[in-house]
Image 1 (tube, helix red, strand yellow):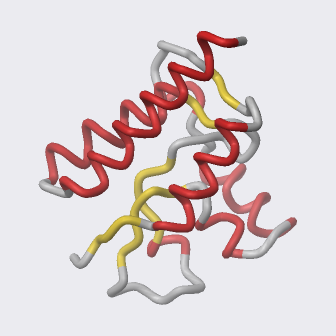
Image 2 (cartoon, rainbow, N blue to C red):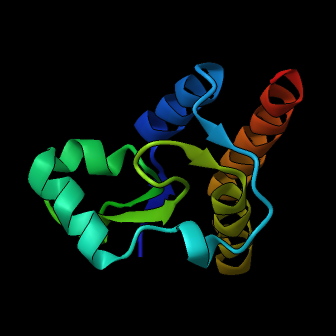
Amino acid sequence: MSIQVNKKAVAYAKQLIKDGKIKNDSGHWSQHNPNTAAENKFIDQHEIEEYAKWHLGEDTSMGEDTKGRYKFPYGDFKTVHRDGLLAAKERAAQQGYHDIEKAANELEQALEKAADYE
């Protein structure tokens, strides 16, 4: 697989964090990660480009208009979740995607800093 950092998603996450659209949760990402039905509903209501902004990784071997292209989700289509960033960082490290791991770590630090000011 040729997965790389989705730079648009990183920029979008930074903006969401700056705007205070965050959840500084420490639960399990599986409880907050949108399921397939929620993903499909979001895509039906928006464009795939909007869906892409919620994923830190992009598999360039997959078609741009497919869900399978986008990896490492970090939010629930409303807010950036700390546990989503932690999950993305951990999975990226396990799979050897160090640039995605680094991006998730930087976003996690920004989220924690922003949460301290709330």
